[in-house]
Image (cartoon, rainbow, N blue to C red):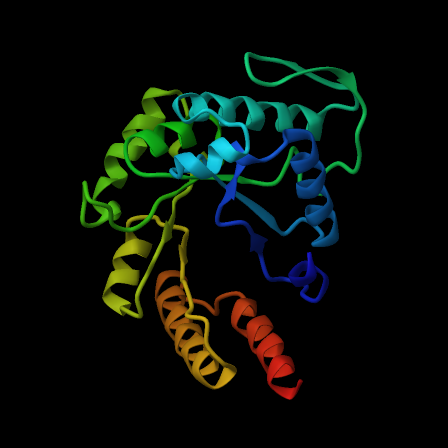
Length: 243
């Protein structure tokens, strides 16, 4: 919420929210509140989790976590879109109720589903508004090479592949790699930064800003949108440095 309150164009999101460990009613309200505070800039990245001990501490059975998450996502969609919401499933069950706020984005913020190919991809097609895989896993060295299969999967499920855009998690400062991502239709790459001081992070952000501008200019032939993530993070880090 703090990032949303001090920015105007920067997308804010979760990467990822472990829905298997959260109450769907409270989570729906939190998502709506962040989306309202950010004026519709929230991206709801979700995951199902892998840590069995951790999720069992939250009362979640490891074997049924995927169905639990699907029901919680479906229930949240009802909460976001109905004035009187109710949902009746195997794991999520509530009678008609009223809850606000509703999200600023309609019908709700984009749900970006994390997870590997093929199972995470199938979940994204079933109930997501985007797929957000890691670039590499044990089963494959480069997820971009699987995107044609993912789009076939979407088409077979009667989803327009364009309605399930791809965001790739974990990218390097590699112009050729980013250009291949762009040409393959990837809409977003997600970069992880080390926990370091401003003197180390600011130059890295500036390099990313230049690289992003170069890649997007070549794609569109025009100036890209303002690279607010770098600007916003610079402001935050400079404030930290002053304090």
